[in-house]
Length: 296
Image 1: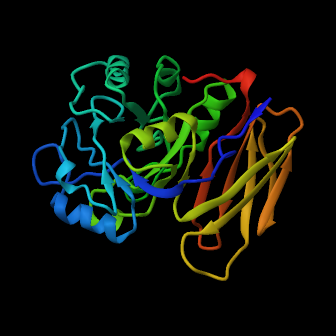
Image 2: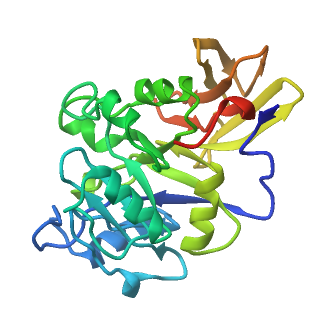
């Protein structure tokens, strides 16, 4: 039986979210600007949720919570390969990766593997990821990397995990360090209420997308037929997108139009990419056969 994480998009709102943000001017922040400045920019960009995740340093941002945008806690674990430990109020950087993952979950948090192809392909070695358990997913798009080195795209690592039956989710982040980073990549989460508890509940079931400027209007599963429609997050007459349906066998179909459809014929999963005329991208979580998948 196929499972569609977007089956019940009603009663909530899509919320632009960034998990990977550096702010402040102290040691470990990687910041050039104050938290006041940074949170102000994200409010102007119409974000609804933001995490300041400095390197191996917990930053209390509760004072910056507003009606427009709520803050939630996190730390970027930076010992060896980087991870975002979200929902925690302390740093676990003195622990090995697996123990840091376990400690994050014990606090009611979750972990995202950062920029898997930074500097080189497999900055996060696949063999090392294979040995880990308990992470929520990975940054399938990290736009900061495009002004550093390597690749900001990690669909190769994502599909590697999915082919093994590991239900790892794909996140988007801009990895903010400077003003020109803000808003280039983000996670769009469908929330039924405001706050970290609702955010985690949505992450737990994959009710979100990774994006660089495209929003999911719907993804429907009718029997074996997947139907999808994307849209811009701004007002425009442009309605057509290039839709790519990706399965464990690679690219299965590519279509251009206002909507697209794909008939499943036993594939273990299919995920959708939508690409706009300006290059903006959308990545959905997979529609998958439940009997083949389990969380990492």
